Length: 443
Ligand SMILES: [Zn+2]
Image (cartoon, rainbow, N blue to C red; front, side):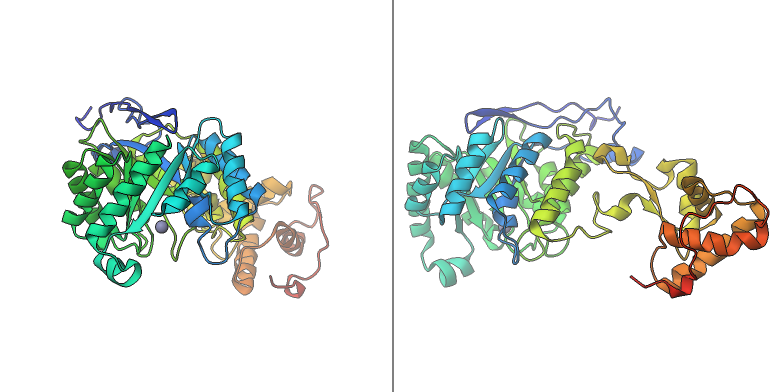
């Protein structure tokens, strides 16, 4: 066992009146790992997740959730074991009612209300029952000059005032540096120090326009955690496609700080402003498969993602990592032949971990193994001499239609091919209308 394979300390911290636990690297359990090379991944700090599907996710253009949809998101996040969710708890009646009802139904998950750095907003959120608040401002020079039109000194005054006010109300407080990744580290450290001195529990680093890389994420988180003794949250955006990688780098940067927690902000299906946030499902499966973190219940991932897909109206792309339908759908002849012999040949993890099932698709590059599999699946009998003609016809039709072919189309192909090679086979079955394949509508 390498030095990196150690069991990491389990932290216990109070968030909204409940204990949250850091992650553990199960050094003696490699069953969830994707490759023997995973042992070279650096250790992680104590990790917790705050999911912001109901806040940043809903800020995505075109997305609006109903009350019941948000309540169901909250229930499913809790089932997964996510420690905290962030939602709007002020600004309109529907968000106020939603925050109250989410809090009322929650058993273990902490409910955080998002706020501008304005005392009246914070008071409103707390009045709607949340046990935690996030207090947000932007710290970059461009935001101070062109958006907020205040000095750093004034911003620090407001920060101390708002954080101490919220703490006096007895809630857990996270204070946020928007556009932190275009803010000087010196000012970020000063901002974090002032927020901590005012009683803040956690400092959120926001990569608001998604410009970090894994290396710069690691450096930034390590620098801030080294300078200020406070829990840190990493809120990443995916403008360059690096949000999950950056979040994992941030988790690695937190490893030396054993008595603290690194929170990662996520959204289901990666919803969020522009290119979105850290995808919850992708982040959790990376923790599980590459770092041995097993505290989240992966079997609840798919129902959650499907619910958010339906509620958001934004379909999960077929090739989306982790929960895209193509993750466990195989088509090319070489891959199907391999998967049918041993699924591990072409699958990074077992689909049953997510409640998913394996599918064999038929199309242009299907091989004989796919044909035999489909014949068995549909209860069709064909002599060995018919397999190659079937494969040829499936390939021709798949290319012509520019998509996978359906079971009905396969039966039609079967009926057009097998009678010529197996006219007297009594086991041959005809399940559906055998209209000529060229007359089928394209979809
Ligand atoms: Zn954001």
